[in-house]
Image (cartoon, rainbow, N blue to C red; front, side):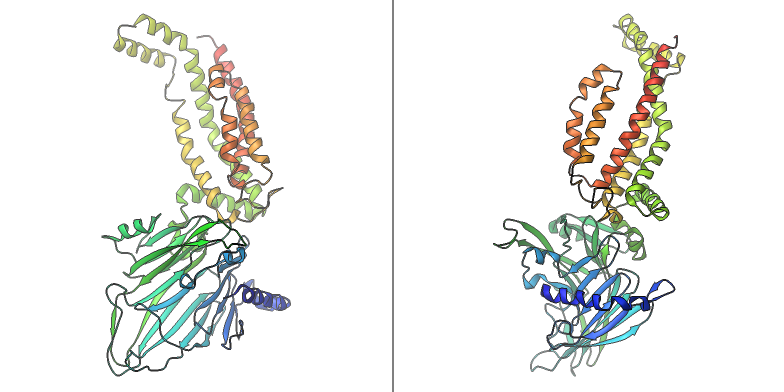
Amino acid sequence: MPCFILLSFLSGFIGVAHCQQTNILAGQFLPTADLTDVDGDGNQDIVIETAKLRLVIAGKTGGIGVYFLKGEHFNENMFPPPLQDLGFPFATDTMFPFDCMVGTGTIDNFGYNLEIEEKTADRVVIVSTANVSPKPGRPYLGLTKRFIFSTNGYSFEAEFILSNLSDEAVAVGNDVSGGVALQYGPGVFLEPFTPEVLLGLRAAGSDKFDTIAALEKGRVGQTFTGIGLKTNYFCMLIDAKSPANVSAREFQINGSDTAKPGHTYTGHVVRVAMPPVLLKPKESRPFKFQIYYGPKALDELRLFNSEEVTDYGFLSTLCLRILQFFNAIYPNYGLSIIFLTVIVRILLYPLTLKQTKSMAKVQKIQPMVQDLKDRYRDNQQKFNEEVLKLYQKHDVNPLGGCLPLLLQLPILFALYNTINIAVELRKTPFLWMTDLSKADPLLILPIAVAALMYYQQGQMQNTDQQQMMAFMPMFMFVITWSLPAGLLVYWFTSSVLGVFQQVHVNRIMAAIKEEKP
């Protein structure tokens, strides 16, 4: 569908903006579904708006022609791909917006008759019936597409009813192509563009594949029920809920000569095919697919029984819930990250304090350890025994400085993962930053993080440590300047709190060193 058609479709919503209050009852958005010729091709289309989606069911194809997300952090088009507007032409054989494939092809038709079967506060049901006519020497098949859209989510059901309209049995598909299949292309393209990961869906869980070759290898001995694509913040899932043949193909998209020359992106066309079938004369058979196309939001995917697609894990989920809790109190995810960082620092401080005291005690008895080393230079076993007695006498745990640090790592990695993949931070502004999911445009936070690290090194009491870590501030700037700003808000806040903790730590270490042995 050309981009100007999409713009005219979206502009139509502006004209009815004054009526939207009538669509809200008890805080619930009432869906709309209207028959209209959106693209002027002479076929009646259906324009649908729910609380989460804006869609066009095209009368020419009987399928989805426009798929637009509505959300606080993602108001944008998923299909047609927005890369078209940036000068990237897509081949027609890559544009399959949830098309029904019958064997190796499609049903011969001259348009579809569209009907709004149901429209309630919970769902919208659209039925598309292919206009077909018999052709000599070819199977006479009919096709009805039935789409069931949830009015408060990003998932929907596509049911394809294949009918044998002839007086003879018809074999549909083969072992290679399968029977009735659902195909989607060209992939998930949203700026900033990130590489796609292929997903093989199973009855319980999913497997990730970086390449099509890995997917083909992973299919051996494995039963998949569907296939999917995911990026950092969005995903597309097609699940047949029964064993199916999944496949994918890759293609390249190159910028035009006049726009974005030299840029190349990779797209995918994915397919879920049911086994071949034999239709008796006048027999009809339904084929159902569950589809999710939207943000990698934990609560949304949990309703689709695919929460593992988000890559959160237990600790990351806990961090996300804390962010959501603070955001519910005061709607600002930048402040929520700061509050979360304070909580993490408070929870970890007892471990940091224990680590500090252990390090101070180890440094305090170091002259005694050196004395034992000189005394038992030729008897390593005796040296080890005496050092152990020395540690026990002075209540020193040689692992006390490492163990608390190791316990902190899972929490820190989980927090890093949460901030890096949380779609809630996408397009969320904070202070001078317009988008917490993108890099700091002014590089203020990377510079501040590096400067704070340099200051903290100056507070170290160990000169050898200062010399060994002298290059770290510059290294820290290099690795942080391209990171999401939301992650740097956490990093900067943690560094500021670390400065105050370091002052306290230095006082404790000085006090322990002054104590008499």
